[in-house]
Image: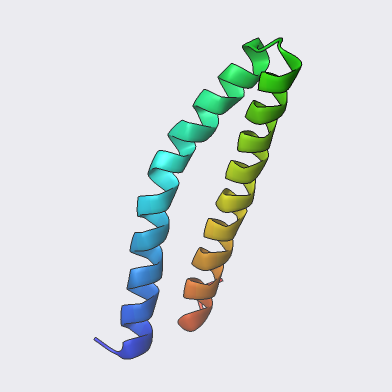
Length: 73
């Protein structure tokens, strides 16, 4: 396996391994955020949701970079 192919495979496996639990975390935080009325707890849940969305975007960027290694659109 060529080094670029190994790197692409590592990126895709890592992205999958990160995305799976992150999806569950995001769903849970979204449900909590909808139910919380306390302003301090609402701020914390909103921050957690924003951070998880940033991480999801980083994972998508990782996959895009991995795809670029072999010319996948």
